[in-house]
Length: 131
Image (tube, rainbow, N blue to C red):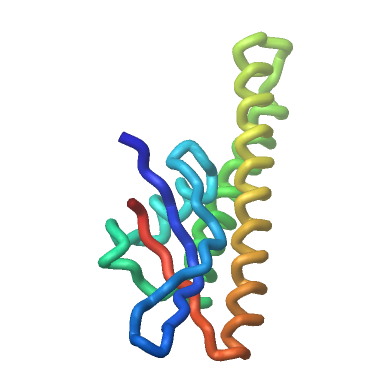
C-alpha cells in the first residue's frame, strides 16, 4: 500500500465546502516525505490534516541541519582515515550522496517557507497529512 505526503492550500467556498489546491503529493521514497515523517509529526488521513506553520517548517529545517552537520562530520572522518580501502571509499561516496540529498530537502523546505509566507499575506494557509 502506497503512502503519500500531501501539502495543499485549503479554499473555503461560499457553501462551506473545502476545496483544495494540491501543491505537493510525494510518495514515501521521496526525501521530503521522509523529512516530514521523521521530523514533522505528520497527521494521518485527510480528515486529520493539520496546518503547516512556519514554526513546523523551521523545526524540520533545524532537524535536517543537525543531520547534515553530523553527516558532514562523518565525511571528514572518512576522508581522514581513508587509506585506499574500497569499503571506506564506497561509504564516503554514499555518505556524500546522502549529504547532497539532505541539502536538496532543506532547499525544498525553504521553498515551502517562501510559499507559506506569500500565501499567508493573502489570508491563505497550508495544510498537510500523510495518506
